[in-house]
Length: 386
Image (cartoon, rainbow, N blue to C red; front, side, top):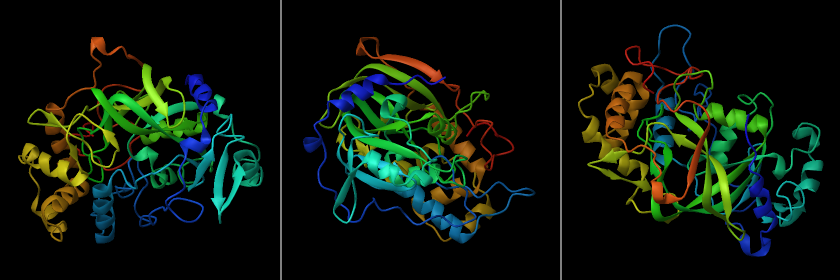
């Protein structure tokens, strides 16, 4: 069902490893991963946010769950990733060279000043990766990661053994520059209260992105975490292929095509202005805004959505934008109502006729809303809004 991006491999072959990768900025064998969420917090597409779906009556999240969700929401899209890395079961190993294949003769730092080829490293861990070498880069799908999907902590949650049936994941994550697109704040509030990310065409912009090379099982899991369900009439994101791109892995030759998840709600617009993610490096066209700033900007847009006295009491420990995030997290009806107002003003994803870039939907509905696979808290009055 999923078409491989073979051009990605040829570009990776051409990478000059010495020029492409700087020395790591962190110590040890992998990038720091935030502490695990409280046990009662469910892992969800943009970070663990909502409590596990109740079997009976809805319950109020605990103060610990609320604090975790609010802090995680305001930190989106999480840690700043400095370089390309190989993700292996929750850990990130920086690439030292890519060789001919990022999954075979490429070299990674394994810790303590040591390096090894990816093949040698994985052969020493076959018991942790399914008993045989995972597929080569040529047999994987190249997907542009531009929000939390570039972060080791987000991948660790998405591919944790408790939620990924296969139990293991090995993913090359390659730093690249994408021309004529910027990474913006999407126009819907996610379950933990944050605004996730999406792409917007912006002539002249340059955005730092990360190519994730996923095998079939990893791609299916990523679909689910993006709220994409082939059997559902609604979805948070849909999966598309963009062609005739200028997408350049650092130190390598430009790619002409890659796959990408595009948010069905569009880009958040406040008084007609869109905002790019402050944590994404590059030269955007829209002004930069942190998660805290863009949430604060949207508050007047959605102020008409009522917040019950019970929710205000639950969130009484928070003020300002943190109280706003808390209410969005605690009450799915607040979240749905706010999303409904925000999406009315959103800027949909479009490609101008003169852009020269081609778009093809590959999987998922383009209709915004909660997919059938979403089992988190829903608003009874607006169960499909998202």
